[in-house]
Amino acid sequence: MPSKGYDTYPRICTWAIFDDGVHETPITIYNTHLPLIFNFLGKKKAIQVLLNRIGADTMKPLIVAGDFNACPKSPVWQALYAAGFLYGGDGRASVHTLTIPTVCIDGICTRGPLRVSSYAYVRTHHGLLYPSDHFGVSMVCERTSLHP
Image 1 (cartoon, one colour):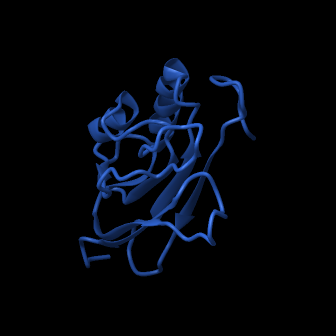
Image 2 (cartoon, helix red, strand yellow):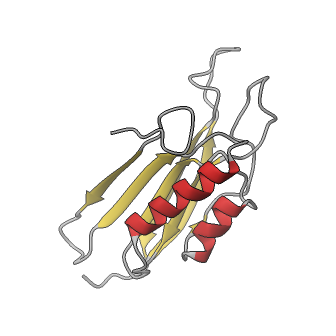
């Protein structure tokens, strides 16, 4: 259920657990959309709710993706780094609208026994028609341990 607890607009975090049938520990993937750029307190509270939900077990393979509405050097990302997450991107712009400066506010981070082998921005468009005001972000990663 979307929540408006920290922002004007409803925000949501979805997650899924993927079991490959080979490894003992499944991979959990979270996808979120944090409060708007200027809502610093809302983002701080929202990222803490997410990190509390995820927990402190750094041996579990986890992926957190989404529109963080914050740049990679921001307190939001610093909280992810402090929780053991690694950012696979290079900080290139992920937003391309006329109303928001061209910045990197979308990303994918990993934690646990995962290695990022590729990270890319999906810049597909037809002329001036784009599927979104943000570029998509994609990543390929693999487990660093072959043991189940």
